[in-house]
Image 1 (cartoon, helix red, strand yellow):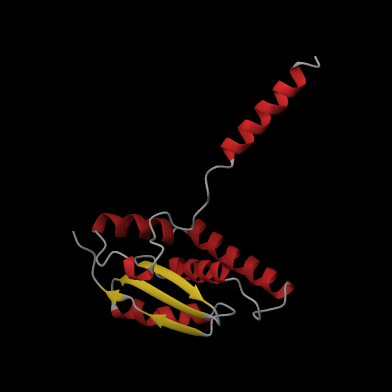
Image 2 (tube, one colour):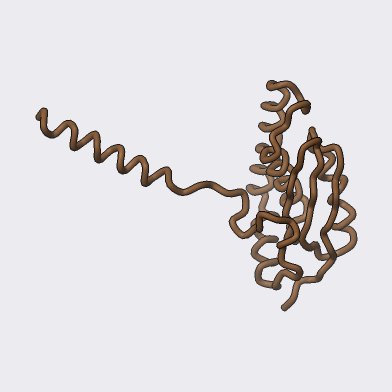
Amino acid sequence: MQKLTPILISCLLVFGVAACDNASKTSESAPNNPNDAPQTPTAKITQASQQDAQSEVRRRQLNEDIRAREQRNNTTGGDAQRAKGDLSSEVRSKLEANIPKSQLTVDAADGGIVTVGGTVTNEKELAKIETLAKQIKGVKTVIVKATVAPPTK
C-alpha cells in the first residue's frame, strides 16, 4: 500500500494538469486586434452567430454575467480601477447580446478607453455600439472603428 500511494497521487496530478490545460475564451473566432476583424462575414457565420446570440438562454447568461461583474466591481471600489481584460470582456458581452449579427472585436486601454472594430450589418447597429459600450461602468470613451458590411452569401 505504501508503494501504491505515490503512484496514485502522481496519476491524480497528471490528470489535473491535463484537465486544466485548455484556456477559456469569450469568443474563439474573435481576433485579438480590432483592426484584424474580418471585413465581411459570410451568411453562414452570420446565421450561426445570430442563432446563438438571439437565444433566450444566451441573452440571460450574458446579462447575468454583466450584472455579476458589476456587483463584483462595486465591491472592489467601483470603476476607479478596472482591469482592461474585464472591461473589454463586459463590453464584448453587451455587444454580443444586443447586436447578434455583428462580427465585432473589443480592445480596452487605460483610462476607460474602449476601441470596437469589425463589422455590423446596418447603420442602426453601428449607431448602437457607443451607447451600449458606455452602459458598462468604467467606460469613459468609445472609439468605433467598425464598418457596415452586409453578410456575403
